[in-house]
Image (cartoon, rainbow, N blue to C red; front, side):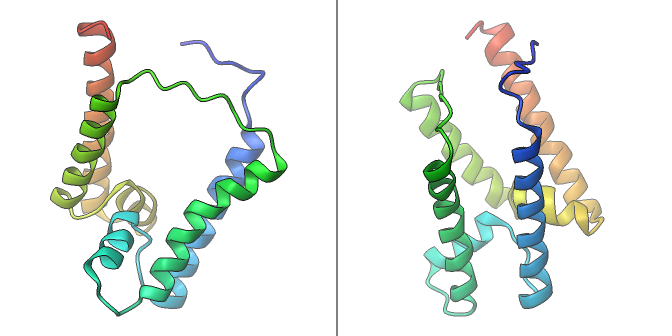
Length: 144
């Protein structure tokens, strides 16, 4: 692996991490809710009325924040090396995994680990391990 030091952006990454931590912490402290995106979006799609204001605000913030960033910064070049079938399949598998694991990477990986939840540690190790294995098989075994 070669690190592209010219494109390495530790300050924006640090700022993004701080913003994620603050927003997840504020949602927990102010509303008693875990900032798991699958749960927030699932609650919106299910039509439940309890807490829809903060759910909608959180999801809108996820969509609007990159647009605001792009208004002041140059857009990075994005290269997607997968076809539409692979992307749709990956999205469906992530959604299935989120339901199966009772949470997503943000719920378990950010909030659950911060709460020292053993269940979230196991879930995070599971989805990270599955991701590592998938990339290895697709890139090195199948040669994709």
